[in-house]
Amino acid sequence: AKDPVRVLVTGAAGQIGYALVPMIARGVMLGPDQPVILHLLDIAPAAEALNGVKMELVDAAFPLLKGVVATTDVVEACTGVSIAVMVGGFPRKEGMERKDVMTKNVSIYKSQASALEKHAAANCKVLVVANPANTNALILKEYAPSIPEKNITCLTRLDHNRALGQISERLNVEVSDVKNVIIWGNHSSSQYPDVNHATVKVSSVEKPVRELVADDAWLNTEFITTVQQRGAAIIKARKLSSALSAASSACDHIRDWVLGTPEGTWVSMGVYSDGSYNVPAGLIYSFPVTTRNGEWEIVQGLSIDEFSRKKLDLTAEELSEEKALAYSCLS
Ligand code: NAX
Image (cartoon, rainbow, N blue to C red; front, side, top):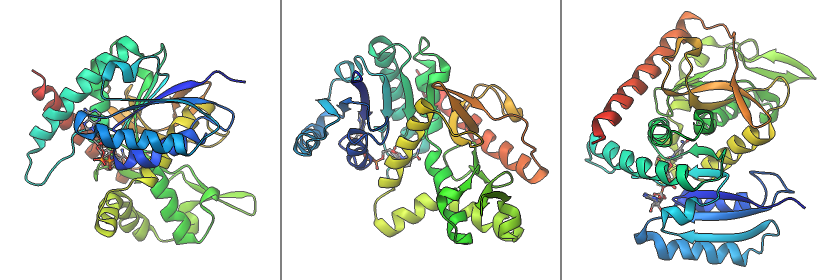
């Protein structure tokens, strides 16, 4: 049998945490033959709720779950973990300035970066979910210089999956037959969901989404805004933000990163930009990536038309501004 892998979930007493931890304990993230030990971190005011989550994990008697460490101590939480899913953060409340929210999150991600760097397993893979996800990941990278930059990513897979879902609904095809959409840029409403290289399998032939939808007006406007605004639509409907879809997408992100993408398929991940597609280097930006042997690689050579170029640049500009704001909050 395999040795258990220690998986950290921060913000584990929150709503995404509540959806995510049973998925991990069931093998959705690392596979049905991979035992896990869950490390759950939250802050003191949530300690009792966190303990309740631990009790439920015990009660669920998951065969793959070999232990639960539920704690409000960052060092204990980070010790020995090979996967870190960072869901905890400071939410923006009504009337709060962007700078104040950024200051809070910068300080959280700075200190959690140091704890991970000192106490996590070598080669720990990090996924930041908490918003502003790209910039939190960038701060984490800056303050954990010994963790390889390739190991620090943020979640845009939910946006990617939302785009797949919209195409599947529109064409009335199975979502598993749609592939190779791309989310470029920031996990915010400036993101660019791009279908120019996406395909649908129709009687075992891959056909371009643009050809099948045959409605560029829809693809260039409503489709894009629906994906960009989906988070807000969920809040409006549920009075709570996305949780099960965020948790499921976080599992997809880590599973594909660790176990690899299928031949001919890419996914979207927020990763440290190397300047590919003329995106400024030094941002955490969502790109199309393929993965193999636990490493991602940006898909190269895709054609970018003028319409797309503007959208790639716009979301990069927003990320550069966020980066500047984050740095101005570091003191
Ligand atoms: P909740 O408010 O339900 O849970 C957040 C939890 O984090 C709380 O239990 C809180 O006590 C804890 N926390 C706060 N500061 C902490 C710290 N310093 N260390 C450890 N834990 C801490 O929010 P939830 O709905 O679960 O969302 C979590 C985060 O995901 C938010 O930042 C949210 O904006 C972000 N999202 C990101 C998405 C993405 O695709 N990247 C989509 C879903 C989600 O909106």
